[in-house]
Length: 227
Ligand SMILES: Nc1ncnc2c1ncn2[C@@H]1O[C@H](COP(=O)(O)OP(=O)(O)O)[C@@H](O)[C@H]1O
Ligand SMILES: [Mg+2]
Image (cartoon, rainbow, N blue to C red; front, side, top):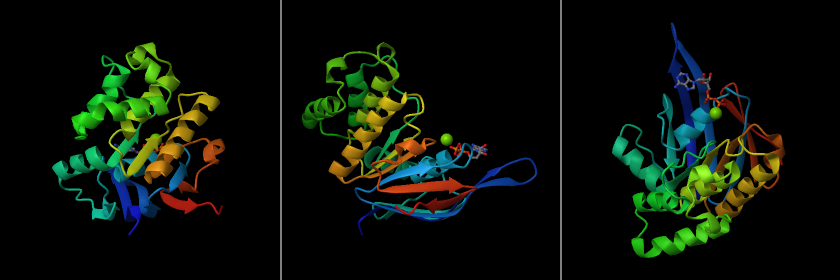
């Protein structure tokens, strides 16, 4: 089986006032190695909720998920943390870099945390920082970098442990269109070369060039564009 994600019947309800809000309704999704998906949907349609479940950050109310062939044990916090550390790379809208660490150290800390052997660490970080065109700025702190540069460091951090699954939640929302495109192209390139599955969440229809699949979330259900 070459799938990085097999999700079946994913349902998420949040408790509200008298009853509950059903945000995801029996969502099914299969993503293969090296496959790149753009996930579109209006604000409030459940994109972040779905990505958080796929990224083992949030438990579904019902349904099952397998990452790279292993069923995710949503009740087991330690196992979830291990899956996130070793198999999943996340990119958030606002980078979420450590403010007092250099660009290099932001990536190095993530690598060490994921158990990248220290003998490989420096070469791997150098390779990634070069790929995202940030090696020159390796000693700068986040506050000394532009939003696009911070996002490229966040990419290096998300990719340094060679995750089989890369998830990005509106990674371009704080960037101008050209810079956003550059960030998305780096994600596409890397996912293909590492045979990782990629899901990028966005509002921006214009980003769909270069993706294998375009998936839409509406009222808690997924549909896919014919391409
Ligand atoms: N922790 C939460 N508790 C209660 N409701 C939530 C929570 N997170 C999200 N929601 C609700 O779920 C719906 C989908 O939210 P979200 O997944 O953030 O959508 P999107 O990322 O597409 O904007 C929204 O109505 C939101 O208010
Ligand atoms: Mg969101």
